[in-house]
Length: 257
Image 1: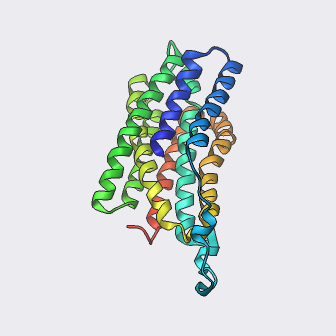
Image 2: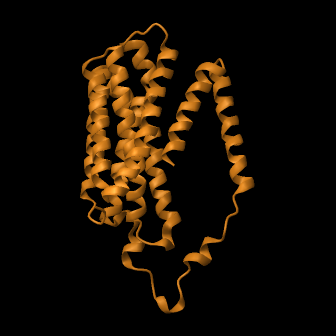
Image 3: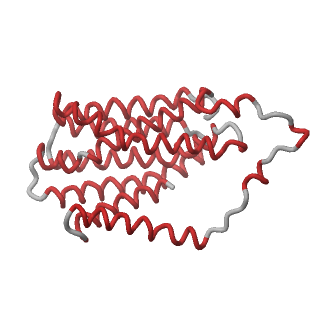
């Protein structure tokens, strides 16, 4: 799942920067890609009725209290907050990358530079996701990988804030990609482990979907006043704090190693 998300980010960047011209054409192309991507799933996936698979037997009694608590269950809450903050940090980096390269670094070709940075981030994230996922399975540890991913992203964001230069931005993109790929791969395992009951899997996964989608909306509301007050340096220092805290919060989860 993490690999598909990163591949989608790379494909979208290539489409809007190289294959189409103009803002309207870019949105139309992205909408068309979304529709095309849905077709194989709709035609090739046979969905079974999950209600019969998890329906409780008459002698099972009511669902456990932890299954009904959702985000009020501490491990679920800490995992949700961790995902929310790390995704928020990544959204702040990516949504304002073009403007950072244009206004702060003043590169000659901002669109090509954006595609280069995105490619470095995505490819390193894909490699890290594969490696971290297997390593995590081998050693039987989850939380340390999630925390380490958030901290790596914080280091990359700090580099962008403190030393605004093109070579540094490339190195920062590598660190952010490795950190986010590590986080994505192992955080999914943590989420699967803390879900309290198969009866409410749809509800609980919906809550975690909010932790992925809401930061994309919140990012501009945080970035605009931060840019006005402290510029790009302040913005990326904020990213460093957010991703570091998001990574470390998973250490509060007690039911996962």
